Length: 236
Image 1 (tube, rainbow, N blue to C red):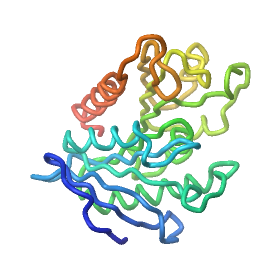
Image 2 (image 1 turned 135 degrees about the vertical axis):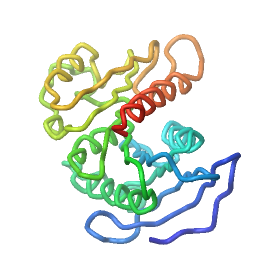
Image 3 (image 1 turned 90 degrees about the horizontal axis):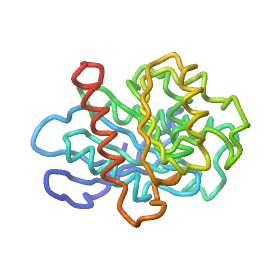
């Protein structure tokens, strides 16, 4: 593990650039830690990005920052293909390896408390693939791409059987990659409990449809409520 100079502190949160190894031990993944100050963290959150963006994505950044402000140690990171300037792996196995490296890094930083993984779009699929890992207590799927764009007839997402931990789905009701009726049908097949929160008049990345507004408070409100409920049950 290597740490770069502190990027800065805002309020009760410090941001630090870090480098860490993937699960196979190859060093070099880049991330940014959002570390709450003033006491031990209330668990950890690892946030992964979508296929066409990186850890600087506004939703990814805001989720990590908001979690840290609530006292949860958070890490957002780049999958290896971003810095290598190559495509993501076809089966997402390399991204799963990267995510598990981030989880190992989080486990070392958070002595007590659970580790939850969150993913935007493709990142949510990677979280599903990795969810059986012993260090992962739950999954937050932000805009899960259940099927190809506007093709809900395409069934059996390959990572679905691997999604075995409690999961929160947060979806926009205008998401062309996730027909909500299909998602409700597929959720019944999951082995672990899951919840769905629908953001009205919002697209795949929760961009507003119709009236211009910031949808993040609704997204974060759903995530925060789920984390707090699980914590109250002493599950997260």
